[in-house]
Picture 1 (cartoon, chains in turn orange, blue):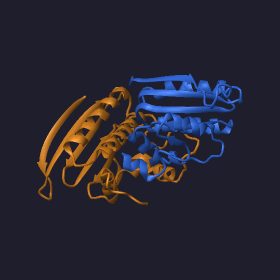
Picture 2 (tube, each protein chain N blue to C red; picture 1 turned 90 degrees about the vertical axis):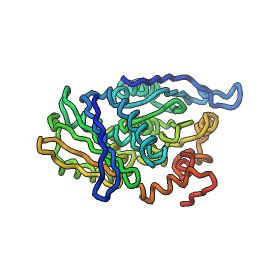
Picture 3 (cartoon, each protein chain N blue to C red; picture 1 turned 120 degrees about the horizontal axis):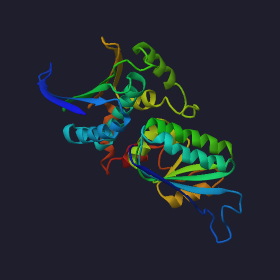
Length: 179
Length: 150
């Protein structure tokens, strides 16, 4: 695995850190990416520990999808973390589009929408990663076709999300959440 | 391959020396997970549980001890759902004990805590296995208490 870290100022004049990792399409590298994600979220963002674990799952699911459905063996996928400490974290995963069962962005979007409606006991082993886990735990989820024929998936989570406030409040033992 | 160790043991879920699960026709097992279930190991390790289901197609009472489980991906959740369905079809029961907050969180987001009872201790999970009423007194997941604990 290789990584590049850059720091720049965004449109709003806020400091943003971008980390790019390239990873061979072998699933045994995923545990390293999960560890990296957990460490990154815990130490470089203002998200809670609960969200660090959630991002760990999000990144694992996105990378695994890029490996299994997006790229041939022996190629590389690209993972980009963009962290604006006061506003959001954005993660992008890009595959090469060379896998046998590769789909276009439109097809993936339709598949995810249809699977969102399925109940927990749907009889399938697969099909929960993107529609249930990634979709539920992010504010934006977007698939686009790349010029090279692959898929770029982009997820974004804002710090000022109401669901996030509940998670932060829940860490306070004096705060009772009633739903 | 990511490290995961799964061990299966017989358990007694009855209250007295004469009241053991075998005499009631129930087969009670505890499955202990230690490590992480991900894409590199889940297909291989799932075979252990499927073998157990094959050996005990009826009245299997399974306690999944997640105390040592650090991570599970969506495919592992898919297998868990399939085991639950098969055990339920065979008039058995499956419960989860001692899941970490991050595991409970992911089970909750896919809707599994509504179906599978998640108990904070092994003793409570054993009691749940004995209970045939379907009423749970302290589900670890399926409500906001799990999020607060996280």
